[in-house]
Image (cartoon, rainbow over all chains, first blue to last red; front, side, top):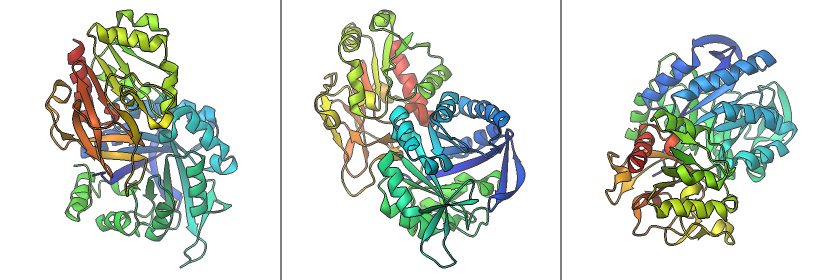
Length: 254
Length: 197
């Protein structure tokens, strides 16, 4: 049976892993290659490197970070953050990324999804969607661009469907409301998107306790769940999380 | 020296890196004639079966010649599907025809593409699965699969049972990505290198 994937996200700025709350207020969490090694030993299923700097100098450093992380790592590696063109995607792939994650640039030019999928295959294209409830208690979710700062004027479910049609291989769905809060994943958001597409949906934003993962894999219908801070500060080990999921009848790779 | 065939169906960086890590010497031949000295051949690939059209003619002949001489061949993902007679995905493009049957799209009440880690049920103990524990998980990303037949070494379940590993003598194929499947994947690549040695 297909396992539910646990994915660790490394938010990288100037070659260091950092993590903020609600997309703001960053603190350092260490060297990306070192963290990647630790997660691999613990049994992480996949890694995402998210570049949150996006200056020209830092982008060159990013390629170096990718290749350092990828060198000894034989699990899937996705790279996102500031990938604006086919050339940016190619640079990430050449450095060792298996998948590129497109967000703001795909919203501005959805044809970019198809261009990258045509060149590298759909399995290499993740469309990242940052979504926010339109109002507290609302079951409608609006898409935001530019690291959650600007409304994209799109509905999350509709955008996910369009991304799939254009060639996306996976959706990385982040709840802006929950990001960094540890209040649990937004299961309603995740279920709405996961039910609307046939490609895998990775839930992100809000991971706190072990049962948050149980909830997002059951009620949220997620195919994978992504977290950052709870792993970085070694509060939750990947192995303990997976054992917990297995005890709850959720298939995992142990 | 292993020849890694680049027919522009996906990026080869990860495969090269994994092979380098187990000490394999890899070249990416630019023309079919360069295959003459290859001790073994690996055909990787992701994406649409139609991409294998690029292998028709001289490449196919050169690969079949090497196989005829007893040199090992490994197909990875799309490269494994190419070992069959063809695929419903591109019905007008023939496969290599070393394995019987045609590839078809996964169906059933599951998400397709099949993306992620899934387990191997080993049905026959051959050299390619030497040291691979039953139930080991490997990383898949695909929508089409090859049929289970007498050459099937391991199967995986996703809506239905399909061939995850095939082997007939010195010809082998894996539907998953050994270069992305942690220690299990590296073990399978080492097993292939043992065939080459």
